[in-house]
Image 1 (spheres, rainbow, N blue to C red):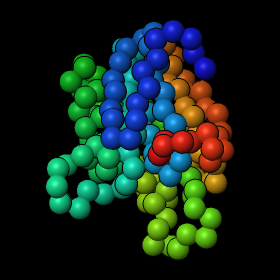
Image 2 (image 1 turned 135 degrees about the vertical axis):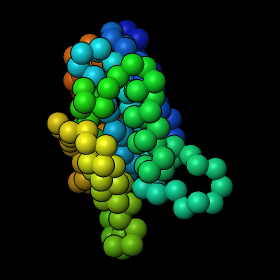
Image 3 (image 1 turned 30 degrees about the horizontal axis):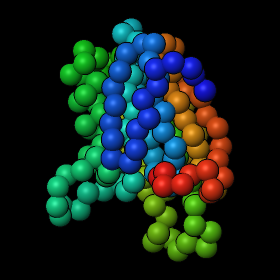
Image 4 (image 1 turned 90 degrees about the vertical axis):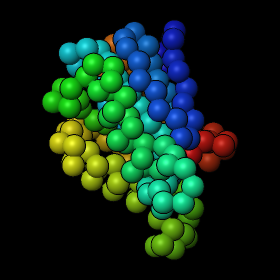
Amino acid sequence: MIQGCSTFIHVGQIHVDTSPSAISTVLGSCVAVCLYDTALGLGGMNHYLLPFWNGNGLQSPKFGNIAIPKLIEAMLDAGSSIHRMEAKIFGGASMNIGASEAMMIGQKNILVAREILREYRISIVAEDVGGQNGRKIQLNLERGKVQLKYTTRSDLGNGG
């Protein structure tokens, strides 16, 4: 992983920064959307647990349909343009072997990311989603590259 200034984000967090920083997280069934503006060296990442906020309680970025628009808004506030943003999505593993179809949270998290990015017309240029393994990722804001390492359940700890 990258040496130097790296910000680690947890479930429900969003972070936007500029080069030469990096943003990292650890994912299981959670999904992280990474946005990058190639012209500005500006990037951001979110980390959400569930696909949809159901209208009860506070609108939290723990939900994909809240976290993704908030990440896009933060990128726009930092000077980016929708037309320059490219997206990469990670996570959405099926961490519970034998889970019923109704509990396929990872797959639903992936679908909400794809749908919202399509609505905003932001291209997904890379993804590593699904499967059985968690992931450690780090978005390098110098070039917009994401480094990925697969994890085991014990590596995840409290990660999503």
